[in-house]
Image (cartoon, rainbow, N blue to C red; front, side, top):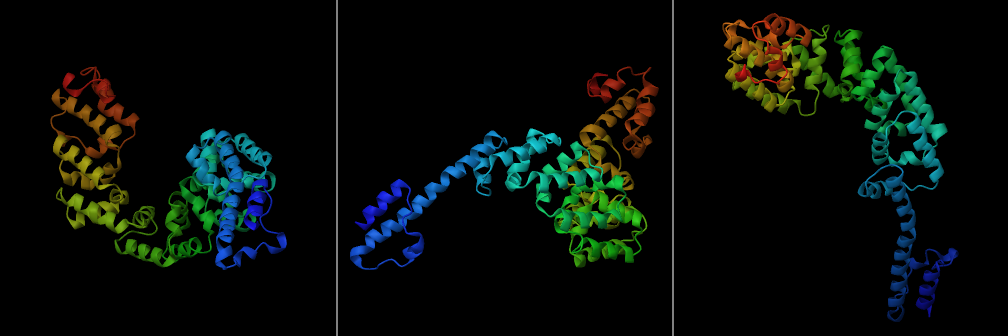
Length: 399
């Protein structure tokens, strides 16, 4: 009779146990004659509790699909982290984001990464943070991109974390660079605060003679470098000094950034071996790094592609590239190949005697305006199709 009563109660949606005895199920009667019915009641209780929660989960998932643009799979995943109790509040949050310039795609990404946003107070929690970032100089477009890429920043306290950290940083960053700082991943510092790692690391730089202008440069463009453990960061800075970098010059900032990645040692070894395949020595690698530290942060594949094209196809000596390592960072498809195609035509027409007469840096590094003036415009009369070759509309062999 007991199990029958429980089954009927379950079907009617009643509680299976009196409120005053809600934990009685933990003391199941182990008498064999009652064991089966007690166990069935326990299983039924758990199944019923699960079924009761499904409508709420389904409601949340449906809302995430229909109002926020999530995929069904993404909605189910997100609904496990948040339960919407007031759709009116969630609607007001979405309306606020749209009014602040967030696109449908950005809102979808924001909700997928941080669904808890939909249960915050829009006027007391969300709006003040958006207004604060706007007061720092962030435009609607900038702020939408920053928040969509790092939605967790909306989950930390404005008064206890964001404002104190920003006030500390404002002593180091000109206001015009604050948005640059946020775009380059500075929100990570806002999440963890400045006291743990950033302030001690900045103190290390100051003690080693780095001027505030260089510290500001590092903070604005490579903020993640300053989030390293101070002990590890100090080791990196000492290594940069031992390589011969002047801490008062901005190139030391690029060197610190290059050596601050979690896998910088393995990247260095791979890239060093790549350059050695083209005849560079250890000293050549270090020399190139001191001129342009980013040459050691590119992928091994990119290094090999650039060297293969410039040395084997075009005919420059590998040592020339060592003198101008910035070339390795240039786009092969958008910069190097189009400009070298122009040179190939000029050589074929006898307007340039040989490749060694072309200064590689003067060819590849200048902005387009000066390249066109020096290598295209002056030869237009002799080779009318030269601009078309540069633009990729005419092949070299067809001129």
